[in-house]
Image 1: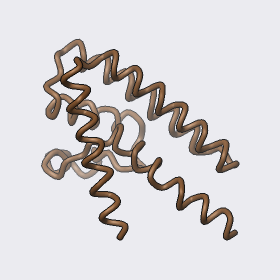
Image 2: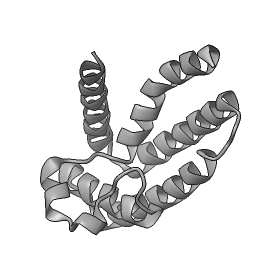
Image 3: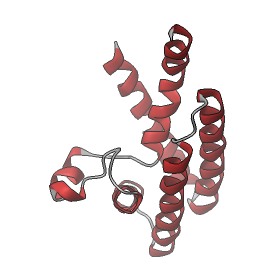
Image 4: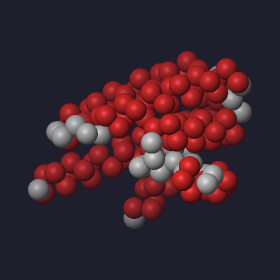
Length: 136
């Protein structure tokens, strides 16, 4: 049990990174959504994808073509994440999610302009810092 807890503690930063990757949630956006449409961790992939796409559109000034690609990418991501989250072996689960995360980052880099991708990376770093401070 202790080994499993240590593994989970090491996995937390990765999990938060994944949550941010397709979670870029802001309080103002969440407040605008009806309670049943919020993109929490238990929300269906379609709701989470829509929420993420809206947040990225607002924060990164996406073009309509980028918005469409991000919507498809995020929907596929959340569906895969839901499936990968059911893997019983924590090491296999973490590796699978890390591989998924790597692929999504490569896809995002291809979709976004260099400036948008830089802004995205900054948002991700800021989110990770806030999450680390909350855990202290």
